[in-house]
Image 1 (cartoon, one colour):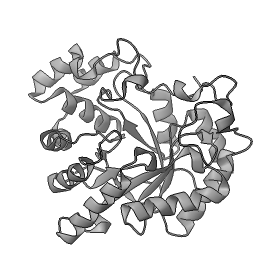
Image 2: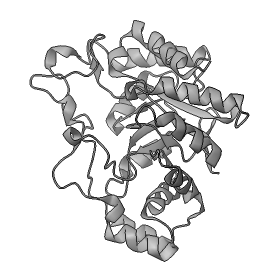
Image 3: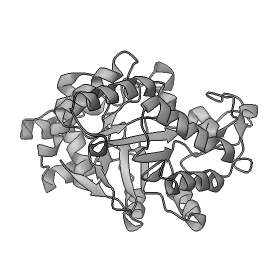
Image 4: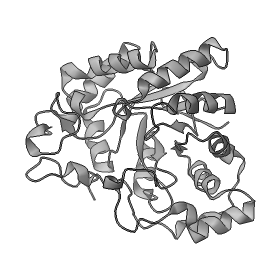
Length: 315
């Protein structure tokens, strides 16, 4: 098992189980399978709609003696409709209630985008709050309050560009420990990785396998299939492993954490075994040629006519 030590000395397991798109009725069993396989890092979010089932699975794991609470790393995220100062702590407490936990190991601002409190997913301009109405720094101050009060062991952000991180660092009392972003061989994000490394912020990669199970509305035409990429497949054959294991091992070689999602017991185990794959310098150089700045999750769904958010990633 590989860990990354955060600025506050907490140890983040490098490979975690992602739960985005994990169906209710399946996610609880997937969490239990993951814990049995040796996972100690589970990545959640309120907007995924499955935290209550995950909470039941965690309690089962504790009661059956599979693992102790202090041995697990549980991440969750603040959804866009709880960015206002008076909404942050209540949203966190609801997540803790759903997960049946006293604290989180990591709590992230899910997106640098704010919705009105009664909106689940904004689709028109009037359903958003502007950056002036819900400044990120005010949301962050409440995240810091949760950290200071012991409701969370670490705090961080997700989908933040280098520019947004720089802006946050100016006024933050506690720097974010983690930035969770899309990362894979088609999207290396070298500049962001270097900035985070220089500022002791760990990058965690989501959609590391290409997120082919996203809803059809989120997909673009002719999306590239990472698991069928010729370079990745050839490296997998060389190491007698799966393409998914090559993709996950690549993250570890760069010092980034990674959260592959699966509800398949065999794949859950296989993904964790990526620890055992050691890519060579030649492999890494070949993978370097694949970087196209390609995003599966392009955040265009937040860019509505006359809306306050454009170019979410500042690219």
